[in-house]
Image 1 (tube, helix red, strand yellow):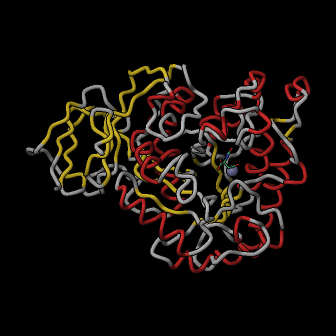
Image 2: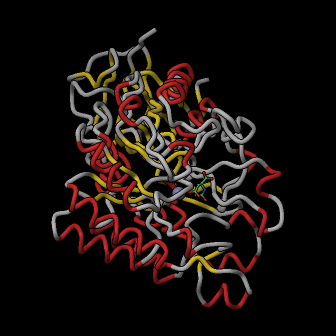
Image 3: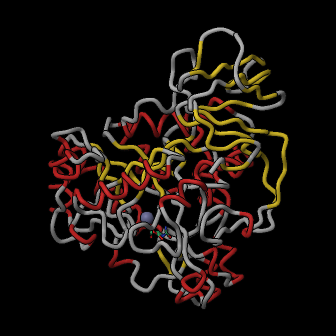
Length: 422
Ligand SMILES: NC(=O)N[C@@H](CC(=O)O)C(=O)O
Ligand SMILES: [Zn+2]
């Protein structure tokens, strides 16, 4: 049932207060009456957020997250589209599995779920997966990634870049030279030395990015760099972009805020891949995000069941949930720079992915994919209050700014009064 909504007195992207009328799935022209009215005084309207890096865990680890529970967490985080990574079980390396994920997303109906296809069969890094079959499947895959693993073999990375060039696809690399991170537990630096933990050196990420930007340049194909975490990686990207290489890059909310000092707590919630780095890396990442050397924020939402996370640091799975806290974390880092936030969290990710209908300017006639934020709210993060099926948030007990009041997917509410509609 498509009802109409009048969103009164809202600030679109931080601009002057105005009324937004949503009718028949689009932002309607002019005023008029509506079935429902939302008093949006004090609220900011943003185009629905788009996440290029989400782990929904279905099929395979439905105990940690399902497409439905992850979709609900995304909508509550202000998202209208998420791209689901391929490290599921079975791996999303065939048309069949990507179509299964795509269908589950449509059934959940809370956000658009776009599957990302694996680059190599089983994420094993030995043989290209059926990239073409996934691209021509109903899921229309355009982005391929072995995230969780690096496509370490340069021949395979070159062939993958060559293959997707034909349909303007993208290879999204988890940049980690595996021979430099064997047994790595945290960032290699002063803290890891002090704690006696095996380090994950920045160069393991930077060396792969440096190689991949040269391969992308050589092939003339599109590379996206997942979860950039170091100042050195920023410099490699800056240099590559200056040379016109078709490379884009993402940073996660946790790498914009947290540092390796937190590992000293040995709380495995702070164990993540790539690891939390130093304060100077955080500063470099923030500057790169403002400057645009890093194009987007992506959550790397990585839900884990309790038994995989709340155990001894060395055995804990790496990763943090992030969908429901991403905008508050970015607000705490950037402040109310709404145009910048909309560009980095909605417009640019939609543009990179070629995703129509999301990341719009909310002008009349555009699809009503939007979220309403209360910037004056302050909330203490409570893991038990998360919609995600998992609780591994690094922000437990932290007070963060901002609250998602409502989210609309093509004019239908997915969140109202801060609660998921289903
Ligand atoms: N980012 C993480 O720490 N974990 C990711 C995979 C990965 O990128 O290692 C996951 O899927 O759990
Ligand atoms: Zn990764």
